[in-house]
Image (cartoon, rainbow, N blue to C red):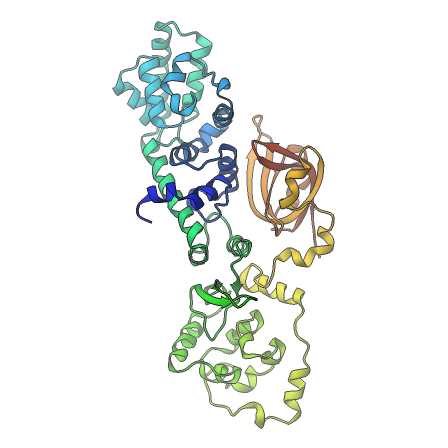
Length: 477
C-alpha cells in the first residue's frame, strides 16, 4: 500500500475510519482516538492529520480539542480570543493545532519576527524544548501584543493556548506522516482482515493485549484456531477453512509463540521432525518429535494435539510411557502392546469441560481461543446492557459488564484521581468514565482484567456513548 492516496479514496477504508473500527491501525486504535474519529466523523486525510495532532496531551488538556470538535459541528461557535485568529487558522476553526500555527499567531498577530516565532516553536518542542526560552519570549510576546492594542486578558489566553503545546505538539508534517500510515493500515484491514490481524498478533499486538486482536478477528467473522502440532509454525499463519455451507474462508492458525513456557528446543525439534514426514498419530508425534515431556504435556493441555482425535486426558496419560524418562526421543511400540484394558481406561477418561478449557487457555495463552471469556460468566452478566444496545439507553441508568482491555489513569483539573476504562462484552466495546468519588471506592478492584459489572449513566456526545460509573463490581468465580 505504497500510494496512501489510494487508501484515502477507498470507500471501505473511509467507512472503517468514520465508524472507528480501527483496532490494530497504528495511531488510531486507542479508545480515545477511536472516540475522536467518531466525534469528527473522520474519513479524510486532512481531518485525520488534524485529529492526530489535537489528541496530543497539551491541546487536549487545554480544552482546545473540545473546542475544535464543537466548532467542527457548529461553525457559529468559532470564537477565538482574537478575531484575526479565525482567519489565520481558518482550516482548523481558529484552534492552534500544529507548531506552524503557533508561528503564524506569533508572527502575524503578535508581530514577532519569523526568526523569533521559530525560536518560540523550538522552545516548546522536541529536543530544543526549554522553559527558559519560553519565558524569555513570553515578555516579548506580551509587549508586542500590547503595542498592537490587544487587551491583556486576550493576550493571556492566547499565551495559555500556546503554552499548552509545550513538549507535546506536532508539526503538520509529523501529523501527516501518522495519518499516512494510519490510512494505509486501515486499507489493509479493510481488504485483508485475516492477514492484517494475523500479523498484528505476530508483532505481539499494538496498543492492546493479544486477546483484543483475537476478539476483533471473531467480530469480523475470522475463525481463530488453536495451535496444532501437525501444522502450526512458530508464528501465526493464515489458513483456509470450510464454513458450514462448504464455502472456503480464511482463518488464523495460532503459532507456538503464544504457548507460554514452551521450550525453544522442543519447537525446533517439532518443526524439524515434520520435514521428514507428517505426524500420523499421537504416538508418532511423541516418539518422533523430540519434544520434552513437560512440553508435550503443555501442548496436549492447550489443545495443540486435538487433531489426533483422542481426548486430552487420554493423551496426557501416555507420554511417560512413550518417552525414556519422560524426556528423550525413543522408539516404543504402539499402545497395542500395553495391557488390554489400558485403551478402555483411556477412552473412559472424562474430557475437559468448557470452563476447564477456558482456564487452561488463559493460563497457556493469556487469552481464550475456544470462545469469549464472558461465555463462562453468563449468570453474572445476565441483565446487563450490551455494547450493541447501549445507544438506546442514552440518558438513563444502565448496568454493563465486560472484560477490561484498556485503562488510562487521569486527573481532574484540581488534581483528583480518576480513570477511563474500556470493556469488551463480546458484542463490542464499552467506554467507562470513573470520576474521583467512584474511583476512590473501586480503585483497589481495578488491578485485573476482571470481568466487571458497572452501574452508571449512559451519556452521548457527538455520537459517542460512554457510561459514567456510579459503582464498579469485580466479578470473581
